[in-house]
Image (tube, rainbow, N blue to C red; front, side, top):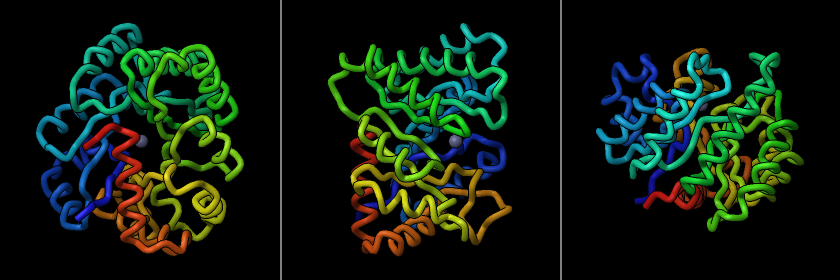
Length: 264
Ligand SMILES: [Zn+2]
């Protein structure tokens, strides 16, 4: 049977890692087939990869998050780059821009992002993008990347805008470039109209699901730690919003995720 793929979960954070065996078992019992674990700096990228080596259904993404307080950027980037040839590294991420937590260093964030986008080109990997209050600049960076570098790339899966929080017109512009949209627990919140419009407004082959565990739990678990076994709640909601039967939705998002990350 085809399972659900959690395209974004941080299983190395202590509150999940301390019982990672049972976290994974509960998820598998609830129909999760595979997990993509993105790092946020060199250390957590390595931890993600170690998890991927321990569990066949875990895949790693490596990268430096815009909010990571990196002391020696050159060294940190080198450490990340050294992991990129590993067969279980399926993406560069999570990378991006976050002006919510810090706007003062916007230029530095953009520079770090561009460096990592170029690594993605070099290693022919998709990217996992984080955005908070920075969609205009993030879109500009991605355009610049596409125009100047990306044409040398021979596959069209550019990556995913994870935990998408913008409106449907942004979603359409992003999809046009060749990106997917990652939707998680926030679609189950009572005020999720905007995100539900996004889900309805994009072609289903551009949709992937994620928990962002331990963050952003679905409605019944708000205020608690999130984990991949809660992902079926997101699919239940999507099934209602899209008026699409659950099984088809699981099959389609499963296939989308596998194409995006080159997973078999
Ligand atoms: Zn994340």
